[in-house]
Length: 118
Image (cartoon, rainbow, N blue to C red; front, side, top):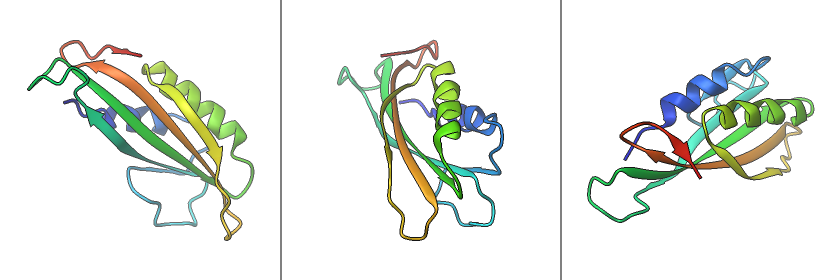
């Protein structure tokens, strides 16, 4: 098992124009645009104890008062740069009027080298 969250946090903090990045649900709605993320899964694809690979999935949510399109593109570039690939992206209707896009990324990490593949 590998903890990919520090790499994801660093990549997302580099996205320009974002006021807050958190690994939890946003608590300060005055700091928009914001990005939240969490590890959706982290499993051993080979099924061996202390195996050399971790198949990880990370969900990223973008919160904005305006369009999420430009930020989604920047998030995609940032996470692709660390080897994760987008599996899905969808706009999520929010009755508050805040624009919300959710995106899911996946990669298989070699825990020995840190190399990410698909």
